[in-house]
Image (tube, rainbow, N blue to C red; front, side, top):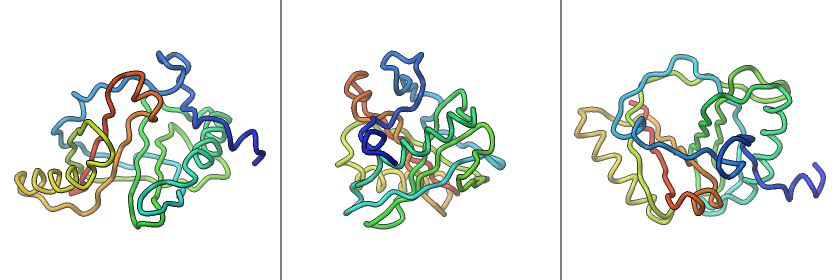
Length: 170
């Protein structure tokens, strides 16, 4: 990867959005829902972190979005999940509409309870606690927790809202 590629913003390629980057997020379809996926297709990659703070997110996104665009695999609605599996790294899942060459492909199936949160990422611990309580009130137990960061920081500032969806696989 060239220095120029590494310095590019992690574009989502939704040029028809207000920002030319991330689409405006509608929280209603994600708020307090139970959804089921059967073999939903994702490109999987890993982001290095320090205490859950991503270190190479931009580089990872640029690399993957270039491959996704080349494969014409960008879905109509963006969905990017993060599994914060350790203090030092996270797994990144980018939903795609078809297989992407030279990428690790995974299919995710299962039932998920979703809840939308709005605010600063510093509140994530509070959100996780609230999500666990919400899942328990549904009579369920969380098997795995995914984070859907709906917009990049620049677009969140433009839209005036910083939404994050938590998806608890039950």
